[in-house]
Length: 257
Picture (cartoon, rainbow, N blue to C red):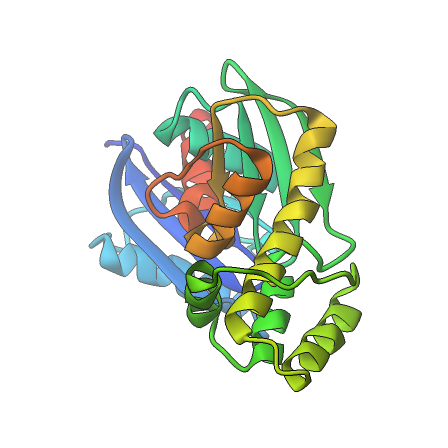
């Protein structure tokens, strides 16, 4: 029987999963994590099996990763996001030397040499520089995340966001709106402030190209543009960057199955 593996990436905001057979994608799925992580993990796994047309006799080797990987106790193995995102990006972009992974609750910069993790930095103590920060700023501007990105890209100027705390930055944004500053300029300032925080982590490790980006924030074109401008490099994006952790989990699972 051919080898079937399942990678589950249970994040703070979304749960992602892929089902592979001998490296071939059978199914991929993304669900909101919601308030019940264990139930979401179970639902994700069952829906992956259904989408991949797997019968009850199939017992894939399961690897769980992500912020909420403990929510999948049925997994055969749990592996850190660092290892899984690294393995996933190397699958799609094998020349990657630096990976920036920005998710809902944390951000990571991973240094790779010959496909192996040699160093990393992680911000998981503060929302600044994460997807959560962008969500809060969008709420302050009363726009969606898509509108936040679009208005930032359309703006010709930006307003400096000086607060490094998410709570204070939201108050700063509300104050800027009250003073009549255009939303686009504020949005561009938000992107720039976020990019500066992430770029500071990159510079601490040292800029090494080619540089790629994964995680849900990589789907935000305005954020990618701001990071590229701040770093002065091109960021390579894999297909479906939000799924990279799940891909990596499944690919690593194939080594253990």
